[in-house]
Amino acid sequence: MVDQKPTFVQSLVAGGAAGTSVDLLFFPIDTIKTRLQSAQGFAAAGGFRGIYKGVGSVLVGSAPGAAAFFSTYETMKKNLPLPENLAPLTHMISASVGEVAACMIRVPTEVIKTRTQTSTYGALGKSSWAAAKLVLQNDGVRGFYRGFGSTIMREIPFTSLQFPLYELLKVQWSQRVNRKPLYAHEAAICGSIAGGIAAALTTPLDVLKTRVMLDLRDPNKEKLPSLPSRLKTIYLTEGAKALFSGVVPRTLWISAGGAVFLGVYEWAVHGLMGI
Image (cartoon, helix red, strand yellow):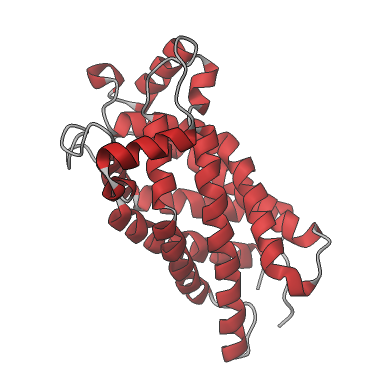
């Protein structure tokens, strides 16, 4: 079978379906991971109570964020002028550019989500909408992009590991079964393995991202620490273990989520392409 490439619109639609599916399905695990990483501690952040707090922001931002990623990723893959033997580099660059595009949408929803999940605003910010209004009231539009740098700092290494490994596993599987493209469940297994490995290795960067987004100090009134300084402070005051807070739920949910995310994407895009 000919290895067809999806169009921009097909990638956009399939990406939106994949992002919404995985974020809603695994939201409770993400809540637990975020509360484990918060500086206030798991119990104070809410423990196992209200594990769907903040889901409203995900409903709004998940589909457009994932759609932005996949449409950019597929477009870059098709248009980068690199030879076939540099395919891993093509996948790394494409995924990294895709993440920057996605983060323009994803970071505001992440800020709202993490603050709602951990009850950062107390009774005033019980819902995603209430938290969003408080972010705007206290920090302006700029507040929605708190942690943008740390999110990019997490996502680029993550995708630079996940997507070249995902594409490599798909190629090797295709060669073994002498069939291309893979079925959706086969691509899902490749996505699960790649996502789990990348998630575990980048957990310290995820902890850093969570701490930055939960920091309510006003950057206009005081100088906030740099990202390397924050990492160093966490290590010195809380130990190396704190840098891997939430590593188990993060690895589990991204491993399982990678299977759903990439499996649904492959299923949807192949359906749209009629193959």
